[in-house]
Length: 188
Ligand code: ATP
Ligand code: MG
Image 1: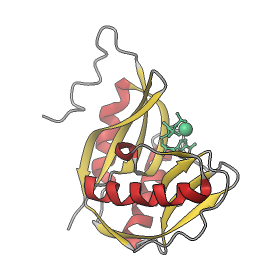
Image 2: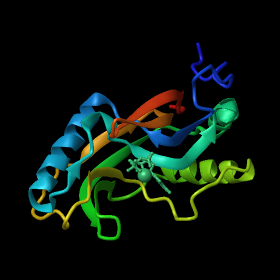
Image 3: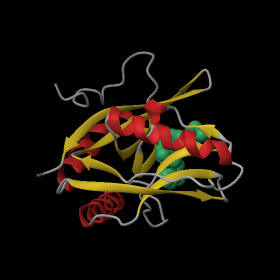
Image 4: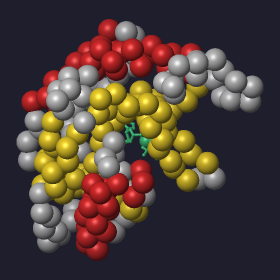
């Protein structure tokens, strides 16, 4: 069953809103590799590791949304999915302004640029609050890092991206967890 169907009925005790975002959701094998990268970076950058099971690449951040609009998001996602692609992550970087260490591709594949652009456009048209910043494909590896990673050499990681996910972000007892609510397959 489509997990989103019917979920727009707010159940007793369930909050009427949830924190959500669209993302590329890696396989366990890709996550393991990226977690290894994160540990290598931590030696020089310090900071906090993103939990292995939370590693992802955000496509579009939605923030707090009404549960009643989940189905609308699902149909929007169905409309925007295009071709599948390979994302080759081959470098790590550091943003001093938010103290994040991230993994990034040398170049963004055309189907990914298109997907991010069309998704942002459709979200804006449909009245969702969207990000004004330009899309930058990355996977956050460390938070509260003190400095850029030094002497970290990574072998290019080939991530075959076959779908996009709508992810629920939760925090309970201070622990952040991301859970894909539904995924939409990209065309081959
Ligand atoms: P927390 O905010 O609780 O410290 P977090 O940033 O990992 O943790 P969320 O805020 O739920 O968790 O964000 C989910 C994902 O969306 C993360 O990848 C985050 O970097 C990204 N994100 C959050 N806010 C924005 C934003 N304003 N623009 C773009 N991406 C965002
Ligand atoms: Mg955040």
